[in-house]
Length: 329
Ligand code: ADP
Image (cartoon, rainbow, N blue to C red; front, side, top):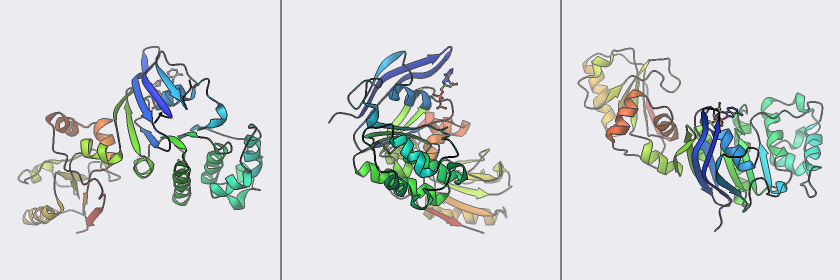
């Protein structure tokens, strides 16, 4: 089967900055390939090289069997991160405008319905909510019924219901054979939608695989977060590695001690430990590793994680069960 997107050793520098330092990837028809990575990693440059809006210094890119600059533009759709259509056009007028750019386009009302805006066709773009506006933007990339769709943070600023509408839409599109390159900072979005994920750091795809593969290889061990002000030394006798991360998933800075490599059956021993030493805490929460752990390990390694990575720790990941359990004291 021929890949819909094929990039080999792409390189692109801006002065001293290597935006792409040898990026290769291959995406098959109907796949969602999610590009994740910190700001400045090279995601936009990679998408620009794949869409023919920038010329790589080295390496090759082919999309739909052609060079990105020679491909039939009516077969691709691109949603940039910043996209501000005129405010004084209705949602329907906007979609009709974009449809008018193609010889053969979808009906604007059908596209409005697909993005969950069947009732807002007459509303001016500027009067739609931020989430509705983003859905119109997603709709504008669908008017030509593209075979290959590049979506740069499609759900940023969309409320949870709107986000799910866009997710379902992307799922429907790929079921119909559309290939999607999705750039996102939302790990839940990548985990839900992506068949494969590529993590870019410093212009290189440092890891590629299904979300489950990446979690198994790089997600590390399960973790028990204890919300407590107690010193880390208080946990010295615990039979597991512990750390106090600067930031831990929405908690106040430095407000959690994290016990690593721990199974649910062992939580009781930790509770006993806390009680024996009268260590006060406000919450315990146990989690399996997920894509966010992969991201934090590979893209923004902390001292602890770097050490673990180089010492080669045991992954021990449940690839299907991402359930979280919690207990409040
Ligand atoms: P991302 O999309 O992952 O945030 P980019 O591809 O935008 O990353 O940028 C990668 C690196 O290349 C960054 O250091 C950025 O500053 C630099 N860069 C990107 N585009 C340009 C440009 N047109 N001129 C100069 N530097 C650029």
